[in-house]
Image (cartoon, rainbow, N blue to C red; front, top):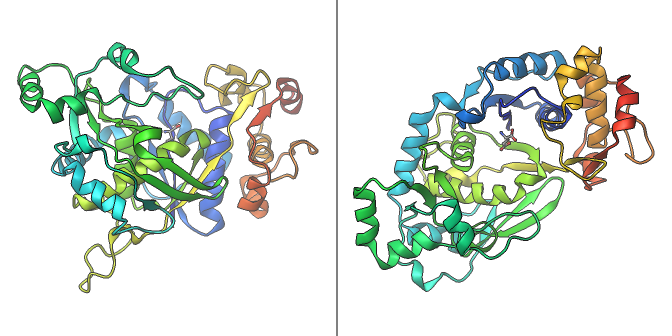
Length: 377
Ligand code: GLU
């Protein structure tokens, strides 16, 4: 198995980032696996100069080492373009048949069939979308819950009903993103923390953007290409990405069916007897509870008191930070009845198990007073 750290270098790491990195490191090291570092700097406007280098120093200082050379998404545009070109050769019907019949299903990411929309016949898997955000808002039902907007399908219908008009708009160089058409199909996978997960691609996720109108490849495309290309089989991250995981399983299957060849395959890709399909690989998924502040807001980089720059300036040690994150993971016992204790990354490895983490799947509430007292702030 191969795990990964996948930080976005948009600022100094905070406690929430270390918690996720520690989870990924423990999962990989517990089974004696390697762990790769991938700097997710694809969204250049969000990247803070020097943040990647600071992250690497912070990870090493914390005792969370990685294997091999770090991979930078910003140097992989050609790979994402190649992947998108391969996907663009597929028709939606082709891929939705494969997904629905589960003809090359792999455990734990199996799929079950749903009903295909009658209008989807002429849809290519990847299609241009000319909608602005305002267009999408206007055509969408009011948002609920986590404010995830499912794309209402405007341009997918345009391409099915008026393909010439879409071609004309492309010829006119009209500003457009590229989307992947999702099937009315349920993706099922097992999560180490949250158990069996099921998402209907069309209803719960919709046709998401794979290349933005500014030319930037989307997180969803880049991360799926990278995990496949780098042979990643152990994925640990926040539970806000559970739904994305279903989508990434779909994109991964599409990439494999389009003939994408990973540079670090986890299995022989074309064994002579044809017995081994590339997605026979078992991938372990673990999505961690999130960390909220006492007001129920998600930890964000703007919570400066939680960032490693501030903590280390106040003399926080690596053991204190790792101990706090190990406690948040549930590795020091019941969160309600224990107080965090400093420990090294290797000590955390000694007490790590997914059983301990899944004993409490609620989001963690970080009490600023207790946090300050622990770190002596
Ligand atoms: N780069 C993402 C982040 O920093 C993580 C993405 C992933 O693990 O798939 O939140």
